[in-house]
Length: 538
Image (cartoon, rainbow, N blue to C red):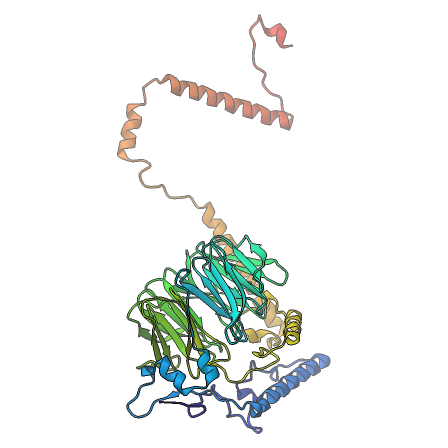
């Protein structure tokens, strides 16, 4: 066995294939098409578009040139002879790696508070644990320093770090609570009731939650306002994941459907019937191209999110409980006490896993890859375990984006820059490249398209109104033979109670008509009195 550094370096499609003389928009740094084919009559607007396109090309060229500074490569396990990589144990791995890496593979025995939900910060420095029976702990697992530890004495369903390690959210028995680094309770989100899953959108500062009631809610943690709440109309939601490419939320439902949501629409953008049973786990890769789903039917399916079709499927001996995809494309699957890691499983169907691990006597509840490190953490019934997975983490990072070695001053500046550059919820869409593009259609074509959209909406409203005016069909059983017989039988029967009710109804009807006439100023027929009482009525 050997741990390699660069013999199996996996590059993203298009990386390293673009030279100075090739098309700059064929590289991996290209995010959208240019507006070079747009014909604009306005000279000033045409100059602004040309200037923007030139800035875009310069940014691509600068990003491409930084590849010379990326000295680190991703290394994977390499088997020799008849060996198989999935046969290597963690004990053998720790003997062949350096002391610092070996110290990151550890296990925490917390038998009385599990099963545990886990979460890492965006830079991979801090770890957050949440036990189902009320135990919460946040600490720096690299240095072994504890930030806070709480015993809430309440059911905990999920935990999630916010934009940095200073704040985290905990989905408790009824409400969602936000705590700071020292464990002080800052907020209680009472509109988020019985939440089971949470996700945080770092560029929009939005906390997305969903629970047993089937309502997807977005909370802006920078202002404290609730952006929107969307009713899924599909019952309890069993799983939730975020697409980091376009900030779309993927929900898994009990009817086997996966729905895609954005905060600016009240209906799902896409619906995919993925499984024959409840969707138990969802994960989306960093590029937003592939999605992995696990269902109660024992299937693990890989989907191409760009075309919304199934690529291939795997079977697990028991239904999977959690999924996660690393920055380098490794897929972690947990089923029962087992954790299986697959390499290159998104693009091609693999026959054998990359690595396996057995956690005897404890069911795995949650799995997460640590950002910028070759680690996989999973929470189970008896605590937390960290595994060494060579090749899982991204070896190179952008210090201006997410810095694993940031100082206190850098963290403060990053928080300020994040708030200044915060994106609006309306900018979340399936295709994030629509922002900044020019509609190439002529003004007349745009007006006609707008008229057609308005006409379609009006036709729908008129159709709904016509449907309401149509007479309803008689319901079954209202005029049965037995009811006809009973009506005939009681037709000539004189019932005193029935007579009293009819007289009272007639009197009330007469009073209502008289009051209506008085309000309209019409004459009201007075009650006729006898000759003896007529003089008192004047």
